[in-house]
Image (cartoon, one colour):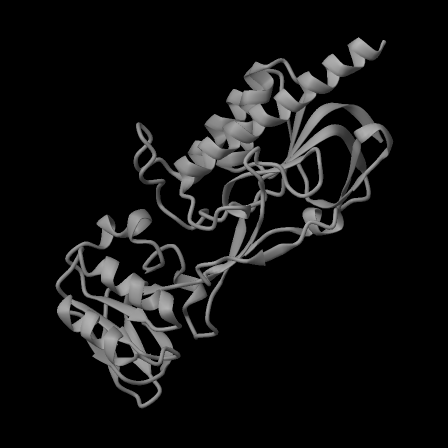
Length: 310
């Protein structure tokens, strides 16, 4: 068991690395545990990140890891399986291989997973020409023929947002029962509606060609958008009895934190998509910086109280 870390950051994406940089610059000994499964790995580039527009996700993470190490932080490629609170406000993190590491504080930035409808070919094109976020990918498919796969109320919101980017947009109802108000909104935005269930994503020459419906017809499209159900990665938090809860938007499940970015377990902080389903990379990075700062401030006050007691 290693016991030489003041803070362990679980999750090495933009939020986790930003937290580790903030902690390292405060001269804290910090370990980042990362399983190497970033949510945005299929994407060609990061967007809406000032000064880093279009940077490949792996390149951004590589630069972030170097910055963590520049300030004395350590990066460990491993999967955190569980955590428990020990005496004297320490925490033990158990890795998948059985090893344990300990720290005085935890920052959990494990992100989320996108659960997609069971539809042939959908997952394989995810992050390429099957998309979900107009802010992340919309510019890249502007003026193209786009089909929205209806899965629920989020699909209405998605269609209206993507209608800003193209005049050739069709919503396939699939699992979404449209009411009259929704139909009026879509019609006012120039969105066509096709009734029916999709059977598969049609792919020709390694590119999306449209949605093949169960009746055999094809709704042509060069890009498909679908609202995923976003579920926080929370194995470690669950082991600490921090539960995920449904998000008010209905888009998925997240972890609740307080104004100090602390979970219901004192000493355990969280940031990024695990708490904020809609956070893009820049927002997740900013939240990670704040979580690192909060954990450091917590340690400062703890050390101060100990010195006074002594």
